[in-house]
Image (cartoon, helix red, strand yellow):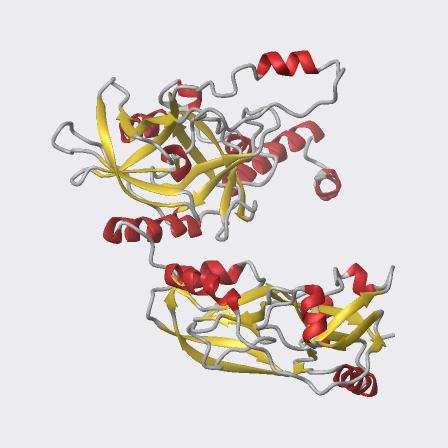
Length: 508
């Protein structure tokens, strides 16, 4: 790479010996490259090998990491419930099943099951220990084990299955505790070195080192997935253990792996400290979580939906419905709105919104930026509590009486046959009373509607964000879209139970 430059330099200095010149230049370039950290030099090679040693760091942290052992009573069968299968006379399996089920009333005694995980001391003064919810879920007894063999019973302070975090408490007077503190996971970058300490396969304090392989991972483990991915070896038993940065701060709680074999293949996931800190604070204060709640049902904004709404780039979260009695049931946010910003934070995709809202304080007044009918507008809403909202949302499905529409003939449009939603149709498709609109009675095979998952019994409630009450409304709205040169029709559909969703269908 440098040969042409060196050759030119030699031509300019013909009196300098060739070998001496080359040697001098190589030395000068090597020194300069090392000083600047040029790729391919000794500096980068040393960095590629990682830190020279993490021995001092690990030595200071090992006492803060604990093993979590639990005991759980597994109920046996109560007898008499499992009956032998009914087989025809002469079946070759009849004798086998008769023997297996010869005593259908036989009872299996309850048994005790043990499990192991990891955790870490967060607060030495109060004896606070952090681990995963799945490590202690269903446990009758929880015990914290230390590296020197000490054991202390633990009580459960609070747990959050949604983020898989649990807070335990031990008696700080029984033993000197070594705490660790949380760092800022949002400052970590892909490629940063990290260290995991845990209890893999029950072996006790084990240290592994790797890098952050990815951030903001969604592995469909929960509604607030935002995992740190690492190649530091994490195995069964590491769950609940800490992921440290090179300053000895906890920037993640190890919680899951992807592995066909059950062992580490270099794909592990940690709950970022940015998410964990708030949850742990709530569990310590209330014994349960207090998450912000907006009271909307959302779905992704696809390219087709973005085109139908004339919003350009697909972004944000599309509001598919509003929970009755929720924070925005006053009309401040409506079905068809696209939430693109919440309390100053951009909502790039649907998955961002639940996490951002949940991290916001209950009762806080926030500004929400929505895209509505071609314009960006700001609305102010006061957040409710998610845990209360979940009860309200589950009760909403009972519905209320729907409005009657004037009788009209059925119509065929966009690969669907639609009709008035009268009592007969409601009974035929078992549609809840709270659902109103135009019922789809038939979907053409191989149509776009079929591809979008539309089925007979779905109800069209809106087209292009305007409500429809009869087949004639549907035809008028489609014709209006055609006259406007629109390529897609945005439909809001309700299922027979009232669950709403948006789809787009290409206007032929």
